[in-house]
Length: 385
Image (cartoon, rainbow, N blue to C red; front, top):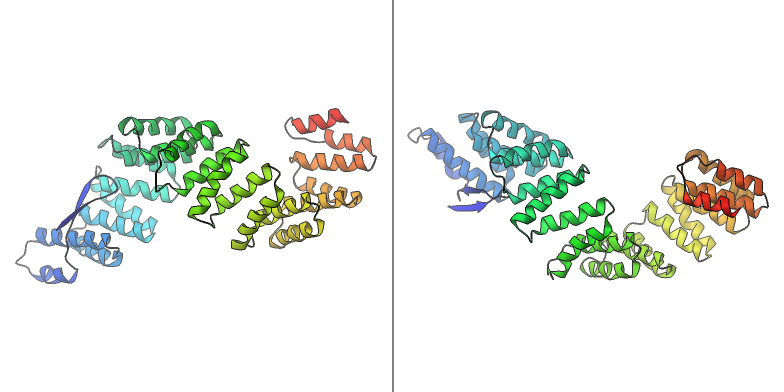
């Protein structure tokens, strides 16, 4: 016999027998039904733990033939189907259990995790809060609720529950990282760094690569690019093909105007993902900034071969402008404005084309036509003209 703690912090007991060991018990009417159910239940959970999910389902089904409302079997079926990714089936079994046993912690926990898997975070929160009525200091559940509130962008509730976890366990990694991501989501990058760097400074040997890239991304957003690079480099030491680390390196070098270095990392991304439209366009931009017009055009066109991309078309228009082909650039930019009249950059680039063509009146009219919110770049250009 063996015991194991599950993710809720409660303990389930597992047998160490096979399904076949209990077939004779099932047919032996001298053994009480209650004992048969108990033994089959132990086997079912043991098989579930060993990832023999289909065999576990077979065990729990046998119990439900003997007792259709057996809570252990209903939860077991829910756990098994959740493990198989059949979330809707798992929900049905957890709900069946809760209809007879409203306070069953395992069913509540499983049902909440199902709603989370379906991105129904508000429903998950409601179920987890029911669970807390029975166990209000369960850190696993508290962090899940805080995570769910973060997903629905409820800063106050998420922050409050993460802080509650830290009051119970001051160095809880999930809460600390969660607070880092929460503040990052709300563009509070300095506060996000405060929490994320706590994990890094603690010298955790098994530091999650996502913490490293998140710290790097905070520096990227704060434009402290040179400080972000070492974190992305460390992440690449763990996984040399990690997209977020490669992109972070490229973007930091772009921010530092080290275009050739940025190109190296864009190239590494494209080696792994040759049809990444965004990176193809970024590569085109980088080559354009180095005046490598033919190569830049090649990458913009590769992006457009995948599907329409406004930034790839803009890049081609800027190439035309740089080559003095103002009429063609103007035509392209006007078409883009028809598709996206809220992108201020299209107006400033079109206005600049008119200025280079000596048509100051059209340049002014273009800027005045911008219908977006008050924009500092539009205002500055109007004042300069």
